[in-house]
Structures are given as structure tokens and as C-alpha cells.
Image (cartoon, rainbow, N blue to C red; front, side, top):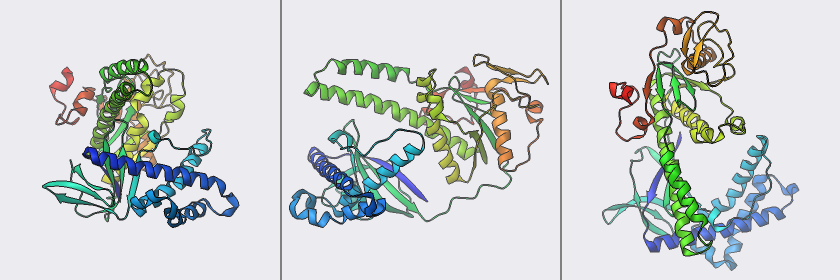
Length: 414
């Protein structure tokens, strides 16, 4: 199994300059490799063969390009091989209907990272603190806020500079352990319906409110207006640009923290998790409510939930979303409902429930069918869909806050 562990680096001013110098050398090498790749005809071999032929030119390049000798060899090799990865990524985008062109020349702001692969790096203790030793570069202090497992093998490390000016190290880790197999007969099962008014509504009656980032957005807009009044290229412009980048980073971190904690809860507490296989790209292209849809980051949530379920031995089932809101969870009769109608009332059997709760039951029913698990159609009516327990997103985000499972009276009052 492969995992990624990300940590903040704390370089000195001199180390920052050296990190930037190595990054810029890699950027120039990447642009050179891109130019050379465009000169090689497709008939010369496969994509991998053409990129490898450029990588094999590195020893000859070092004879006249002195700066290359200052950078560790595997860093140069991974920089060249990035051409292959980027072209494959463009191919995937093209398959998904996007218009893509050729690889572009990378300016300094768009080339932010370089990678040590297999060798040239290690975690060490020096001067009473933990440092990341990078060959031909420096021993950089690192903040290990969580331990890497003892049985983990460090395969690579990517050093990246964020737009805020902060440096991070992301370790690619391999562990010789297989994920547990999902149970054949899951007992703890849940269906989850995601939305805007309620971020997640599940079949256990828990409704998680949306994450309120209005204050952060207002601050971002205010800083962006200030940036627009600065002279581009000036020192004041650069300082303000960094403030705007910090606002973006603050938004991104709070959102991902919320999604990580929510997905970890469902993957940990249940044997089977059923969700909708949403076409987020299509929803985003809709002219209505696209900003709230983007802010909800449903695809990110589903991706995090999927890999955490796989890691923890939990069934993850993505079902067809068509009709989950219209169908009655009790009898299956479809009823047209505009978006502003938030209650489900079946004209055939009389079953009444919250619109999102009804959808969650339909999602769970389809998920159980997909994995071949028996399910009683009368369950929603017999249980009368347990009273919804609203949980503020704030309780999920705050460190040390109660988990969703602890449905206390304070949760209702929020």
C-alpha cells in the first residue's frame, strides 16, 4: 500500500535561497526537455522511449551546463520524466472532453516542486531537532506533526514551494501490508446524500450542515480588491499577492480539514458506505448555483471517502444518482419535486420524510443491491426514518470537537 505524508519545512533564509535556486535549475531543465521532446518525431518510439532518450542526454548536458552538477542526479532524472507524466495527464483530460494543446513553457511561478526518488534524502536528528537531509542541498528543519509508521519504506520525497512562500515536503511511503477485506455481510451500513443546504444527510438521521466560510471569502475579496490597486511588479504588489495567496490557502485548508474528518468518520464507523456517483463536471457547467457547488467540493469528498474505505476494509459503493430524490424509499413510486420542496410525501403509500433523508435511503438500497446484500423494503417505514439530528459543520472542523456519533443535546441547539 502506498501513502503520502505531508510536512511543513522550516528553512532558514539561506536555505530558502538554495531551495529556490535548485527549483529554478529544475525548471530550466524541464523547459529544455520539453523543447527537445517536441523535436523528436512520434515515429522515433513510444512516449516512454522518447522521454528516456532525453534523460540519457543528461551526462552530456552536464559538460557544458555547470549548474546541473549542483543538483542531485535523481532530481534531474525525475524532472525530465515529468514530461511523460504531464503528457499522460493531458491525454486523460482529452478523453474526458476537455480541449487540450501541447505542453507549455514553465515560468518561475508555475514550476514549484522537485522530487528525490529512491535515494539522496533521509530524516535525521541534528542539534536536537528533526531535519530532512537533502543531498547537495541542505539539512532543513522539518515539523513532523505525525509519526511515519516504523514499517514504512520512504520511496521518494517531493519538496514544494506554495504560493504563500511556505515550503512543504511530501513523502511517498510504501507499507508491506494488505488492506483488510470488506466483510461479506456488512452489519453497519449507511447511505449518504450530499447537497448544498445540508452537506451530508445519512440514513442514520444525521444531517451535517454546510461549512461556513463566508468570513474567509470576504477577507479574500477584500485583499483581492487591494491587490488590484497595486502597481504590478512592485514590492507592494508582491507583498499583497502573498496575502491573497494566504487567503486562498486558508480557505483550502479549512475545507480539506472538514472533508478529511467527515470522510474518516464514515469510513471508520460503518461496514458499507453508499453514495451517489455524481457527475460533478456536468453539475458545475450548469448556470445555476455553480459557485456553491464548487465550494462544496463533492468530488474531493467522495475521493477521500473512497480511499479511506479501501484502507479500512469498508465497502464503498457509488450508485447511479438518477431518481434517488424522486423515488419513494418505501414503495418506489416516482414523484416530481422542484428543488424548493424539501419534504417527500408519497401520493401512493403516504410515506412522508425529509427530501434528503428519502434520497439517502434510496442510495443505501441501491448500494446494498450492488454488493448483493439483502435489504427489507419496509425498513424506512418501520423505523419512521429516525429524527434528523442536525450537526453543525463547525463541530466537525474544530480540533478536539465531539464526533458525529456523539449526538448530544448541544448538537441540536446548534
